[in-house]
Image 1 (cartoon, rainbow, N blue to C red):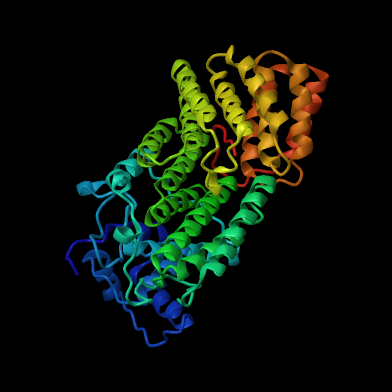
Image 2 (cartoon, rainbow, N blue to C red):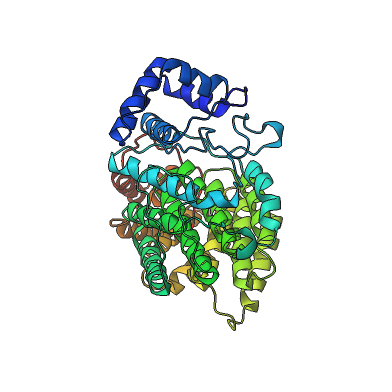
Length: 498
């Protein structure tokens, strides 16, 4: 007990709307359901947790995390409640120089945070609760909190958890994996599963496989609580980073934005634990893409500055090219045409300078020439909202992207068609716009990506000025029929590219 109020717990308690007596009764009931019938919490104990900063013993933090997760309809972790024993708790967001979301956390906490968060996410899935009530952390707050941490040399020996006891990690919610050693064959199978999930996501969108990815990540988090030989531990952290990025991207794809951001942060931690700074930078670039999509390009630029500088000297030119395209998209969203063109020029130079003599990591194999043109089309189409002359350049890059797309990149092709149709509308060419818009609609049937629907809504807005054209009137009706009915989704003010 530190005598100071636990403001994190207090804030969430206020949102939940319980009385202290109600929470005490719920804790006892939930603890019994989790196999702890001896627990006897009362109102005075709850008051001490909130008002005096007392941290209750296990299993109470886990019980509280379950209760708040169910009540608020979003993942609430022990960390969110301010109930972690080591380190300071209960500070206001941004107060006293402490970062807003407890990141970066201590290295030995990474596996525990990963396992707890995925366990709570799976619980929401199982019970049919889908929520996104938490607020996104600002890009500036995340980048400030993580800057020094990301720039230190990430070597496994220095940074990975030192767990003499295989069960050293803090208890972490439901679905806890029994820690045991695994070998290279099991890790190879996990690495192959990542490729399968990644291919499915690129083809069909994140909605159908998100739960499977989160479940696999939960298992890997449990494996990481056992101390393996360095070369295996490093690979296992790499699997965790790849799965966390996928879980984040799939969450973003279906509109679970705060959940997505948490996964991107977890991915950056996991990558750094495994000594892979370029992967950590790429994970943060995903968070930046998310910010642009949500209409927050300033936050995106803050994150991209950290992603680029924190990736390290070993980052391949193609990876650096990809990072520059995201920065350019953020600049386009702000109407900064000259800066966007300079940044895209650097991206092109970096891309062609990559001779391919060093094989790209698995997570970069999706970024090929088609993606380079797709991102350029996206940037120019976004700039065209501020400078309509950019629409013609957007059309050229979108057509190049479509011509180069390989089989299995269905979602990206849909995005290309929508970028092309939107650019045609802005360029006052409704005939061509109608053609490409219909190609996008035909391709959308089996896709579970909410981001494609966001893009389609933006294109629908552009059709308004041509509402008197019979073909465009028909197109508008088809778009309205194709779009799902809104269910309180907050989202996507801007654009996203896979």
